[in-house]
Image (cartoon, one colour):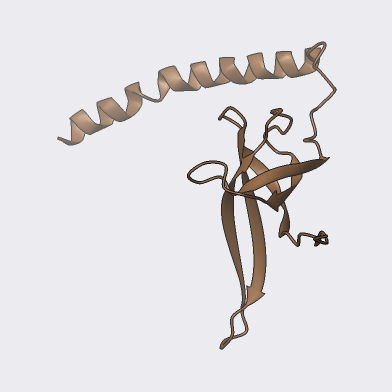
Length: 130
């Protein structure tokens, strides 16, 4: 009897940067490592095409991916889980503050008044100098 060996697969955690493809997401994984000579921390980002059969991950999600057999020309990783879904604002603007509206109208009127006077003055000054 052949004993089953556990499969050691690489696992990474990253952010979904694209979910345009059908059953495919692009996951960006950032890592930081010190330079071997200068010891400065160098940050690199790598993008992985990941197989997502149920289209569960969306843009901005934090996901865990795992390597697997080749699924297509570029896909060698599959989605394991969505760790954190992206934060979507639950608050919607219901009404605009009346003082903000009057302030914007005042500033627009002021800009229109100063805008109509200022273009005529430099044009006349330029013609007089020429």
